[in-house]
Amino acid sequence: MYKKIYIEITNTCNLSCNFCAKNNRKKEFMTIENFTIILNKIKDHTKYIYLHVMGEPLLHPKINEFIKIAKNNNFQVNITTNGFLINNLDNIPIRQINISLHSLKEQDKVSYDEYFLNLFFKCQQLSKIGTFINYRIWRNNCHDIIKILEKQYSVIINKDDKTKTLADNIFYSYEDEFDWPEKRLGEGNKNKVGRCLALKNHIAILVDGTIIPCCLDNNAHIPLGNIFKDDLNDIINSPTYTNMLKGFNDNKKINPLCQNCHFYHKLK
Image (cartoon, rainbow, N blue to C red; front, side):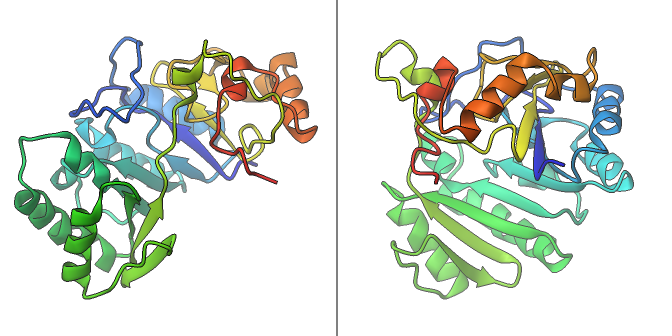
């Protein structure tokens, strides 16, 4: 069983943030039919799904239908969003919503006041029905956003705290910005030593059904198969999958994308 499986319901976004990797794939929105196929194929492999790899999930016109279908199939639903389209969500309780507040600094169309007015109101509604709200902040250049959170929730945020509860079911996570491994490809600074949780506790499924080891493989450099064509158990037992997993277990990165990834550089 996986701890979680990422499902990319769209690779289209309403923003174009400099910190985000770009995907060169055809822009698509997953159909309800394909989403249902995926849930049926992964139901014996996890109970936790994250509706995100690339793209903005709340941009999907069927987002609330997807949530209802997933819940009706006993999945715990998690969403990662930039928060601009938060009002597209119905008040349906899901496990957790991760909101990347640093996205606010990458646009000039919506004021801070308008953004947070909508966000705080909706998050309060969702938290009251049991959804965990996680405000994600990067340590560099987000002091103004931190001040807004402190004022809203009457707390003091210490930069040394990685996480802090702000209110019932509402908290923040305070982390360093990470580099996308694709951006490092070709630089020659490969690190072949290291472990990763990819394939051990999670995999990701792109909007076209391509299965990849993790959510940092934004352009499917490591395609393991396709959920619409292949049986997941066959993929798990394939040479590509088993060799990669054995490498991680032996503290070795065998794929060039992994060798350029620093996300779990300090993982023991």
